[in-house]
Image (tube, rainbow, N blue to C red; front, side, top):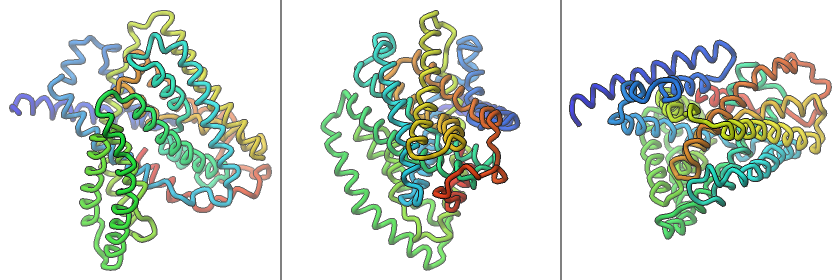
Length: 426
């Protein structure tokens, strides 16, 4: 690596990170999640806003792989945190409502998205049309769990019954979405198909070998008072190995990061868990914005034709109506009153960074083309940005909100730590 490339790298890194921080902070000041500003930082350096020569000057092609590598480390850390935050007992005591909201928010948009994708496949599917249709269905069903937690925390809704319910439902829905996406990626794979047969072996090793080792290590660390600073490097090694394993198998490293976080011990770590989460979140807090800046630079709507604009409007419309409508219907069928079902429908429509990650993976895997990628990123930004204003419009407030119409089935305990750690990672 020459000195010239290093100079370009450090300049590009500082510019991208600085722009992400400034625009992310501005987004938060107007009541939006930071990811909206970070995506906008990338849009400002995209060919849609400046010339191709200008984009090359800001982010030279020689340094993009280096920035991408750092961004992927941040993404792996983020996915580890997402997996670690999903609790097996989360939603206990409100399972009927949680499952109702989760089912409605996943099934309806999945079907609607797949139906929309059928006529779009001829234009926007670079490879398998079947994989394209399946992917669009999965992508439409996503809720951005960490961004949702951030919105709930910022608006004082983490202790609100509806906030607790939607957070639990989003956790269930995101878990289903990641599993479905892994299936779509495996279905669409074109090389190394024999390695897919190793997925059950990988999962078996993770559950039967890695999980017990992690539990023993955590117990010893807690008993001996070993600080988090000495535990985190061990976890990072395991995290990177898990990412390497799934990437080699052919199902993308994000699933390895998510799975490693999911098998992490909880209770055995005691107070260490919070410290570990904080340190891992700090890594993601620094590097993850790079991922969204780079994602924003790939968006280009400048060459869109009238038919492409109509397709974009259809994508946004179907995403909003199917997600909100499915959530509302699921909530009502589960016995929730209108006063709880309506804000739940608004909250579950948040897609944010989870959607960006999924569509970026799809672009890398050849499931979608550049044009459809741009549409999905715009849809993710729109559906995320509209959540806050809609909550304000419908008068959804914090703990002081009148709870008379909320059934007593929905306890509010047990949600704060999850919302707090998610807030740091959003």
